[in-house]
Image (cartoon, rainbow, N blue to C red; front, side, top):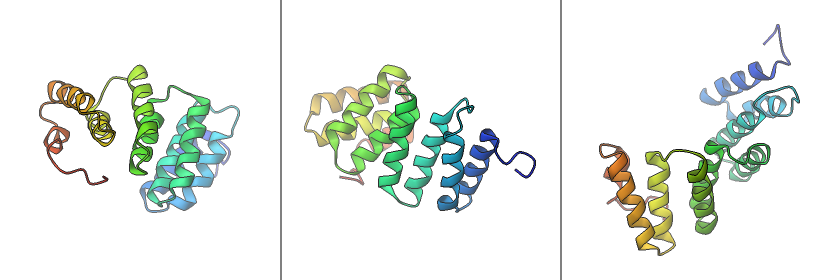
Length: 158
């Protein structure tokens, strides 16, 4: 950092380090500086990282702002789509959560976390068929995952 204090890649990596070591608030300035650098190849990742760190604080308004900034830069950024789906779901905004999950599914392969969130979202919306379809997909693709075990458990968020 001393040799290249303006290198956006180093700024992002240092911010990740800070966030992982309990300094989430301090990390945000480094993520933002990296994300705003016009020469940085992956500013969307810096803003998505800022969103994840803001969520740890927890500052959900800031997290949403950063995830949306990442999606403004790259509308197909799968991690930011998942994070926005999760954030929306946790705020009981189930229709937007569904929309982010659907967008995620058009740009990335399903993973157990997204599928479980999709099951829970469809249940919250009263769409039992959709929930069942996602549950079947989860059981077929990831039969030994902890998410399959969580299917029958009460949802901690709703």
